[in-house]
Length: 280
Image 1 (cartoon, rainbow, N blue to C red):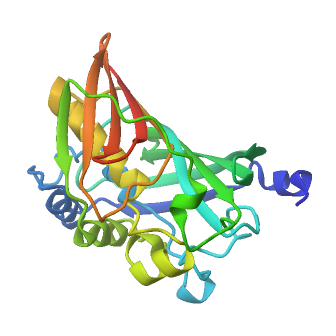
Image 2: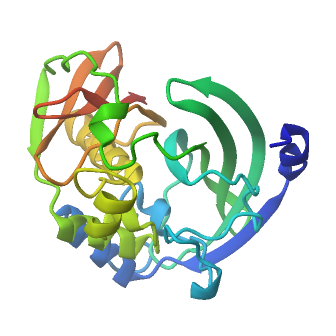
């Protein structure tokens, strides 16, 4: 692939707008077993912005994996696997019930790297969420694209064993049911079949179960941090390394780090899947 051609997508922008309704908050809180206020003007729970103003691509323009066809907003990288690799979020002003939120997305960078299983393309997208010109949240999203694994029927053959996870000062076990994954896919209008279609995830992409969304893990970690510190961080960043599946429980963990927290998710019999940092 011609990286110079792909980089012509750098600078492309996309705008989407949505009103934060009380129903969206009720669905979010029900999914994560949260409580909160729903009347107009009430502060919305953090990380709900990941459910707002998401792309609504017509079904006819979806690829085999349930994602939007490439070459629309995202560059036409013809690699069959793509996942959210990580990101960073700055909480500037709360989103409130009834706010008309505009999400401006801009492709910041496209790079190529050589990975353990072949070539990797990274696309960095910046998002800015505003309400009547007031900046609410800024976000960086890192998306990774890679080739089919050499043996697509056995994910374990293509993943190098990693070190066991550390033991966090604070820890909680999470059971990632298929219902939880379905609800989150529905709220974010995410058609990626690896999150809800087990035959596809297992037989086509070679995974042992459904994959727990990166943003879902990030939401759990961010709310864990808020619970421990009692307030919303100014910045929350995270990076994924290996997937977590719905066929076993996983832990969310946290350790104090100065005035902030270091956080991570880890499968109970596996390694660290996502690392995160919360700063106040």
